[in-house]
Amino acid sequence: MIKVSELTKRYARTTAVDHISFEVEKGQIVGFLGPNGAGKTTTMRMLTCFLPPTSGAATVAGFDVVEQPMEVRKRIGYLPEMPPLYQEMRTTEYLMFVGKLKGLSGTDLRQRVDTVYERCAITDVKEKLLGKLSKGYRQRVGLAQAILHNPDVLILDEPTAGLDPKQINETRDLIKSLAGDHTIILSTHILPEVEHTCQQVIIINKGRLVATDSVSNLQSRARGAETMLVEVASRDGALDTPSVRERLEKVPGVSRVTFKETRARGSTFEVENRKGSFARGDLARAVVQAGWDLNELRPTSVSLEEIFLQLTREQAEAPAEKPKAKEAAQ
Ligand code: ADP
Image (tube, rainbow, N blue to C red; front, top):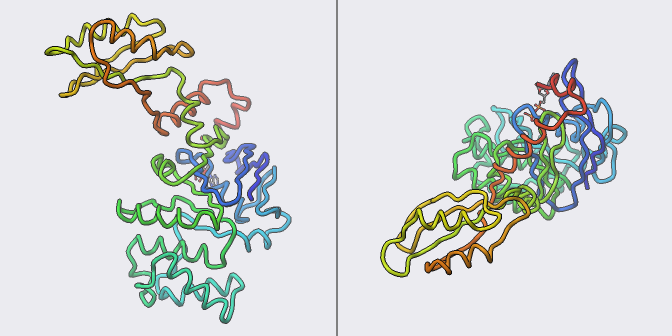
């Protein structure tokens, strides 16, 4: 549905987007992730035909953003970080106005406005002035204008920025309910946002693509040194945790053992293994042969935040192909 190939945008001395390529399949929600200044907004503005690329190409539903901008605009809905809502207009008036700009009219327009009231749960504020709406409602009206012409693709820039936790949940649910019918790219610098909402992630940093993968693949890829949580209990009385730690440290391949906590059930240790030398069986045997009970043995999950830091750190440490462009993007 979306194809981006070597897309680049240079401002005077800044390379905001530096030869990025990715594809997004129909019906997916993709998280577009990167720290502030990474080039997310610039990429989105190129995809929505607001900004011409310096080089490279992008197509939306098969239409080129430079050659066929009218066709692209028909198929794309954009929610910028600050939705352009006219304070003095009422919700209905505004949606009718935007609908006409998007080429809708008559019964068609009225039906679409009715549909988005329901989809975005804004029926309550039909007759309210936009300037009087809460931030949560403003965001929903922003989404309503983005989906008004029933576009194939939705591009949402930081859709939950500035919302309270309840509004964040409502907006996330709304976005999820829109997937399937729509292909969605959602930009954010908030990592849990992606874990909650997206199947696929595109990570950019300093204008360059760092990774594009599914959340679960990224997690397994990031697990360099595998870490296990081991819960051990004593068969009789209190457990001597230093002895357990010492015993676990002797298991082949183990690089580090950290005592985590003691609870009624037993004591938990975090055991790190050197890459490629992971041995669950050896850990289990060590515990049992020493006369303790093994309550639990499970891999720790890696948060997207750790992955993100790991990937952006790797990029910073790797010799850059174009160090000048990278520095300029700062
Ligand atoms: P993000 O959305 O990820 O925060 P942006 O796309 O807004 O990142 O910005 C990427 C880089 O491009 C930043 O270094 C920013 O300062 C620069 N930039 C953005 N817009 C302009 C502009 N109009 N003129 C010059 N530099 C810009």
